[in-house]
Length: 87
Image (tube, rainbow, N blue to C red; front, side):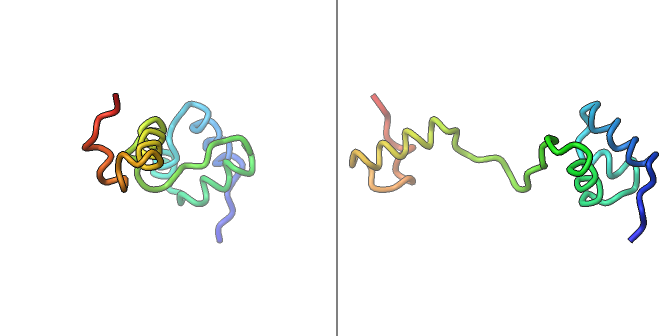
């Protein structure tokens, strides 16, 4: 494993503090995503960890309403919930 110079670490910090996402930092510096994420976690413990995957399809309000409909017996499963209206 190749060591990261202090100037590269400074570049990572500067780019992250200016709001660039991790994948932009990795492409500009030629480093791996794991390397950049690890450096940011070491130097900035409060820096958010990028989440993998896609965003949820239901908002927290929609999830709550769906659970209420199922609990009240208006629908028997979550697939039926979008087809009913909440008064």
